[in-house]
Every structure is written in structure tokens, then in C-alpha cells.
Image 1 (cartoon, rainbow, N blue to C red):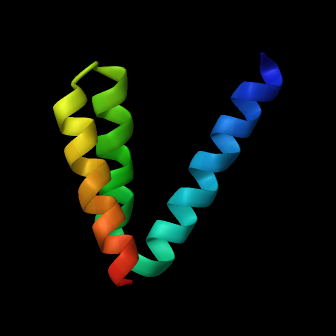
Image 2: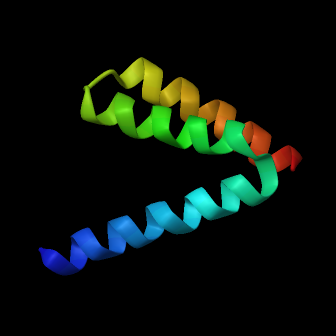
Length: 60
């Protein structure tokens, strides 16, 4: 269980750094919105933010 949590946090840090390097503040805010949507169980918000993030990452 601890290994899964460590891997999840490491993935979040890596994605955050990659988003910040390529997209700046907008990428980081989208990642935060995805995480907040998942924690609050708002699937539409999380999916919409993930789609926008994916589109921006393909353009970067």
C-alpha cells in the first residue's frame, strides 16, 4: 500500500514538473483541477480538465 502511494505521489510530481515546463501555470492549474475533481467526486470537472490538459500537451 505504501509503495502505491509513493508511486502515485512521484507520478504527480513528475507530471506537475512536465506541465510547468511545457505549459507554465495553466498546466499546473489543470492538474490541480483534475485532482480536486477526483477527490470531490465531480467526474465532469475532472474529465473536462483532463481533456483540456491532454489537448494542450499535444500542442506543446
